[in-house]
Image (tube, rainbow over all chains, first blue to last red; front, top):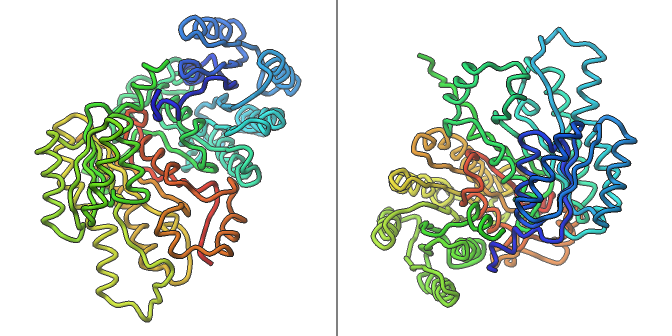
Length: 262
Length: 260
């Protein structure tokens, strides 16, 4: 084994991933398992998350556990953390990946919708991290990575519920980082337009819009779940052990529109 | 599992060029890129230092060649990329690491225009020129990634640092813009911004009191190691970051190790 492999070896680590039945969460789980980690996958969709966990365990040989949890239900999260610790004895890393939002007219939201988005996209990550902290503190190079979104760093009136919740999430991650070194590292992967399968279409896009987005991206393609999983792996690994409090934009170089329109 | 590791962080068959590779962060970059399988063109203004790095890489079974390069000299820049192409056939990875700053001694009333021009030529103009020479080769080869070593100074505000800091800020924005130009070639460009890292350059200004002040502001309560920076460079050099371009990441223990 050479140094490059040691840096990215997750043997003996236990990683929790929320929203793990979805495209990005399940691919991240698969890659961590391939790098040797035991992975606890959690999602509100019990049937799917258990099937994904079983498939990854069979493919990689790493031990994987699929657990149902509603990320907005604090009791579910407590049960999740207890189950993981009972099974694996520790928590080395957490990917706060769960989240979702859809296009809403800027003036078409209300208190209930705004709060619901904040509960799912922001508060869930706060509660999950708080519950994991006592265990993370005991582990070397422990780290938490958040799935941020490009809409949380730029004006995004089309996604007012989701974008403001993601902006809050990013600020929260940075606050956790400055207060928690050297014990636990906190970083954000700011995700651009990724092919999430059905979830993208449910958010309000149609195939013609997605083609136009691809054409505007510097790397001329939308992201894959694998592109995002690679960033999770890097930030969680030994290679990033002096990195905390950063936003890593994974967005294909961004969307470019000429300042000299034709 | 190891097959997978070797895929996304593997640079076998790739050619990397590093400036200022004889010492410190540059040397660390050369070594980790070689470990990941790249053939490394180690360049430095001091050929002897570059040769020592090449010897160390070869002793561990890697491929490397030493080139003298003063980044202030146009002929040296052309020769550097030319040597990479002649020796290994192409350039896939370029690490613009060579840089110079005044270590907090840039009193704006005492420095000269010659000094300011020299800093900008080393920190901004040479990286641009090497990109101009290397990107067509990267485009032909089908794999290209450029990493500029910037600095926390690029976003910090301090006394007597205006020239170095602004040159590094220029380097950040140069990369952010060039990402759009180079995307068409399939070439990525990103910057890595080290915090205070244990190199001979830092040792020349570090006092125990300064170190203590720096660590008070650093969540991960230690100064950076060369390997911390080199590992971020490896990430950007490797296929693991193939959908990332135009970015700066700061490797700084979460903190801000300013000089005052």
